Amino acid sequence: MSASTATRRTTVAPNRPDSVPAGDPRPRTPKGGFWPTLTLLVGAAYSLFPVYWLVAASTKSAGELFTTSTLVPSFTGGFFENLGELLAFGDGAFLVWSGNSILFSVGGGLAATAVAAAAGYGLAKYDFRGKNLVFTFLLIGVLIPGVVLAIPQYLLLAKIGIAGTYWSVLLPFAISPFSIYLARIYAGAAVPSELLEAGRLDGASEWRLFRSIALPAMVPGLITIFLLQFVAIWNNFLLPFIMLSREETFPLTVGFYSMMNQGSDQLNVYNLVIIGCLLAIIPLILLFLFLQRYWRLDLVSGSLKG
Image (cartoon, rainbow, N blue to C red; front, side, top):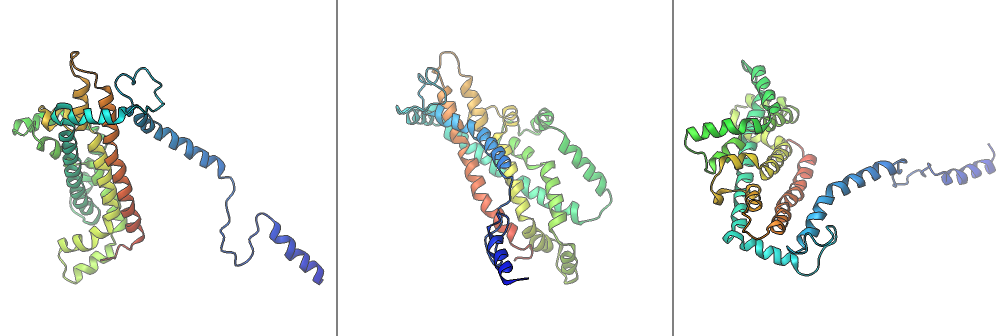
């Protein structure tokens, strides 16, 4: 090969679009990413459109809500007017409902996560008689809609005298077959059986094994379970609607429903419900943003940490 030919190849090759010089740290950009990106953007716009509608509608006063364009925000001070009326409605009923929603969502989510962690770990790492039968009933529980169980749960809790109390909502939410199923799958994949056997040989108790080995490895899965339970409880309407009868025990979902069913002699409350719904999604957004940090931490951290 002549020197001129080698020189021509070395000068022409880098000009090709798919070539990267040796030692170049820049990664190659894959082709054909336009349509997937466009699909994701369309999906994001479709998902965020209701949120934009809430923001735009919450800026309108009661008179502007049905007389102006739905998608055009108002800058006449309707947002702060609606906010003040919402906080003053029913002597601060919105704040009471918000506190009840936080109580139900945090309490029910933590209880369901704790039960799922223990039950999922036991189903994944212990062999006992009837294990397959228990898992079969668990799958059946996953397939049964919660709406089917609402009336039987009310009759059972009414019989023991706690219907209408906070416990009538917290206790049913504490048991989630789907959360137990997720914990069982995650524990089976994330908790090393070899470490459990080594711990037993060293004389560690089963509680110590669960606390020191299983729980650190299951943290990302348990955070996901808590998030799913929190969102499900926060948005749940039917169970608290059936169980609760006193307005001071209502969560936000049932409280907004009661606002919408005010008598004909009451003022129009549509604008108050809209701004209340906007405020109600803020905790969900903050929760997602906050827990996303822990997902990343725990996914890159080894399961043996701690």
